[in-house]
Image (cartoon, rainbow over all chains, first blue to last red; front, side, top):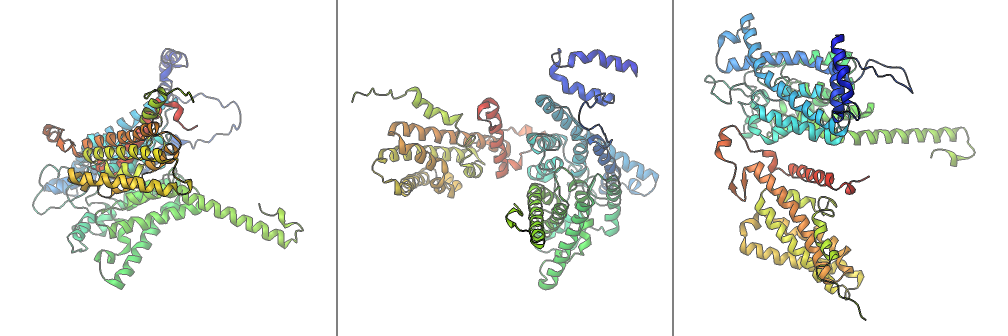
Length: 416
Length: 214
């Protein structure tokens, strides 16, 4: 270890300001702090330090994503082998599980590598240009992007989407912590609107089905696509492509890598809540909002009886599609969410309501959670503004009332 | 009165003509006329026709208003400007319908909306009403061109990347598509025009540091 330290020390002078490679200062710094604990000493101001820094926070989110990722590997393999009728692999024994895991891992690994490679390259270059330190901002985004894209998306599209998400979602606003939109969701929205054929339809979500036909009678439609297709054809039926509540809880239905398994997502949610990384207010209020909107639609169906999608049990909405994944991992992003406590409730409720509204009313977008979160990302500062204003007004009124009660002689001094 | 005549293409006049192309660009610097940039640039051809129309209207409106500037009472100048600009736009619209009917159909309401394009009204109000006809003509021409350049650049990238075509002809070879290349659907939607305009502003400001807001 000390040999490595010596090596780093030997190169260090060249990378300091004025050194031969002075312009690569931040790149060098990033690698040095990656290898060794930084030896910087605080010289003024507060000396108390907490271990809870960005690096730890990001690592916690990545850890929380692991159950969903691992299950995603398995499910990617499972759906693939189901589509092509390989009974040996779809059986629920060790051979089958191992085959599915292996297939999924090999299928998704390149996507993860591309997402991290492109994102980190942009991160390094922009830190270099600005003279900032390279920070950990991309760790979570780089993991989220492969988990919210269908497994068939070609690598060049992944690269393009990552670049778009990082540059237009984050860097132009000033880098990590300054972004208005969640970069990973922006990357997904980019693919969704640019290369629609890879994102929707009944082949997109099963690995390998874009290139070759599966066995007869197999449909790779996600439960939501299945319903949306029925709506487009004018005869909506509650057809979930042969899957039921139990499948959605375990996660053995077609879908993007991370979104299918409720169990895995809830494990992640537990990690995020116990470590205090994510806000429970947002998480809870997104679910409450979705459930509430589902119930309103149930009521509407009883009154009008027009669209059978509205009659779907409200809690199905929480189990289907990316709703849970979005609520747990995307809506709670502390940078893009509302900051005030009341604001968090409003923000979360609006996301839940809008996600279900988009799903049920617009069959063109079978999945509404992405658009709902992006929309509320844009609205979050506005929500915060009004919450703060309301608080200021309330306290001013209280002050005036207190002064009047005390019989204050000079009311002019009260308030403003 | 022995005033020296200013040369027709003096440095000052050239600045009126060329300034809007770069430092005073109506779209990239003054952020005017954004809606039509989003609406008509999905293809290069309508974008070009729109650019030409706006150049013609801007130049002629500035010229006419400058010539009339001493006879118009200032209380009714806005309504007179509107009449003049509307008159020019209707003529442009008729010409488009007669000679490039297809494009005219694509541009639909946006030709009529040139009347409300703030660039034209703004230049008439801010420049033509206080200057002689010749500089006013150059100013209108310059601002129309500044707007048109942005329109054409945005239209170029949107049609190339969104449809793989330029001026309605396929330019990205079939072999690309066979290798897995796909047209970018987002390019054909208005939000991408906004992002392209943003990128143009970004590039332009990295060259002209003094335009950057402090």
